[in-house]
Length: 280
Ligand SMILES: O=P(O)(O)OC[C@H]1O[C@H](O[C@H]2O[C@H](CO)[C@@H](O)[C@H](O)[C@H]2O)[C@H](O)[C@@H](O)[C@@H]1O
Image (cartoon, rainbow, N blue to C red; front, side, top):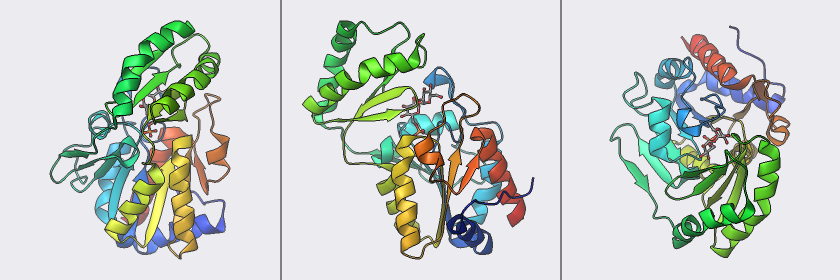
């Protein structure tokens, strides 16, 4: 497939920088909705079958590749199928919005201690959900340093999301946490870390001369901010939005800022394949 053309001049510069000097370019990707198709049960999410093979071809040509995700790093590594994958022997996975990291060379997860508010929220959340009479299918994902309440498997996911938003915001605030809204999920997590800071640190650490970032959800906006700030400092960048795969769940605040819109994880995998082909 030929390389798609970014819609903006800045995006075209970002893509050109990667193609001209791939050895200085960093590629960073979100996991759910970008590398992995959205599925009803978060425990069943897996990389798109073409994603890891494409990354395996591409990664050895680039300065560095990172997956930056709201998932715990270990979950993303496992669900992504990244450990031991050919060509990914220098992959970095930054989990929990950057509060956790996993690096392929040693395979260990480094994580900050969760603040005490997480344990307090864990203790109070079941009674709060009961009291609200949440619909069947509401499901809490315990992420260790955060709790995510999912509504995708309820009969009316958006109505359940709206019902929960205020009370979960109050609970989070009482314990010094924040609510991170996502695709049919409200996550109560510690403030501080975000994907923008995680990407900025990674770009500095790798001394990258160009950056490509791909994401699909509100949590990716902070990484978009970082790419735009880097562009302002003369580091070319390309912003990719993984679109909504025909589910009607697009995230306009991300799509309207992207240089390149691709159709979901399948489109992301196709883009990675095209980049690999162009560099071969
Ligand atoms: O930063 P990401 O890698 O995009 O992770 C964000 C959240 O993704 C997961 O939830 C989303 O994907 C699920 C599986 O497809 C889907 O069922 C759910 O509706 C989506 O919101 C994950 O479960 C969360 O912990 C992540 O924070």
